[in-house]
Length: 426
Image (tube, rainbow, N blue to C red; front, top):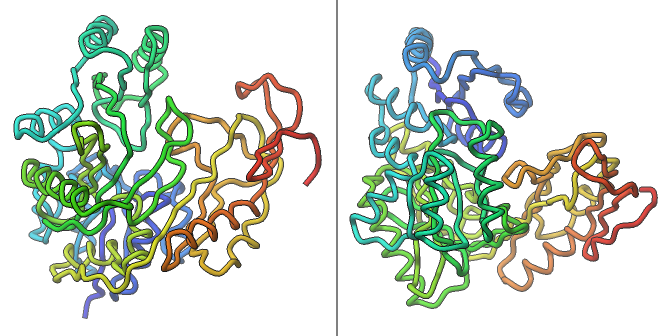
């Protein structure tokens, strides 16, 4: 009898391990296909070996999977990365496996196309323009009115996204995006958007069902680096109903009724305004599991292998994710306290993604996070207190380096919650 396997196309350091562990729990053998297997340390940690293949080449993927089919029983194919989710969907269709329609995913990954579809359906979104050069960006910003948000039409993790509040900031970020510093997967196209102001919410869905509504806050405007996420968000019944209605309208309009999706919005003077719809599982699946007992990764895999998913809530807790974000560039001298923080009752996970002597170069996106802490308990106030107690135990020291953009000469030591800058030792 052939071994049942789940094919994973690439993988991220955040969700990739969750997919591997969930697959194994379901009795599947996970096989990752990657253009650069060396970047996936978590796969080797599970005693697995990825297969090297050009994951941007559909024919190459079909060839490798066809060879694997001679050895294994391929139960399903998927990816936790947005850039490869449509590719996985195309492979599912080719091999006759359950999966989403790839066309809506491709359309949704293009933020301009997504905007046009949502606007056409009357769904509230920020005012926006498409621009391909500096003159068009300047003209669009003038029409919309400052402040505006500049973002690449295709991208994830807030990469290349900036709130521009002045003409100088607009010109500087335009030069960054179009002057060769930003990496484009295709010809440069920029969205110029109205800045929708108000509390931020994110919605996790599966199929045509809203599973969770969370809330978050930004650490370092004008960049969009998230400091904290909380599930569930504190909402009135009316607010919850309006967010759910808008979210389900997005899914219907974008034809995303199969599998997971994540919807980001802000509550403005107009009510909920949709910022972005991501045709994939959101980054907060661990929070959903802690808050409600619903494992979205496992339920997604069930769909992928043709089984029925179960989205029933087992309990109602509050879960909070806090990112550990440096306040300067430099060289990380030391970081400690993670073991003590992880031992606190109510702390679900503490993870450090950096090691001593690592260069710290802030990019203004998801790559700035040095690690995170997750707390959970039945009570919102209690969860916040547990989280803060753990975060206060985690300390680090960064020596600013002129070559990394810092001119200060002293050693910067992080001592939460005060965040004082003092010379000293660990």
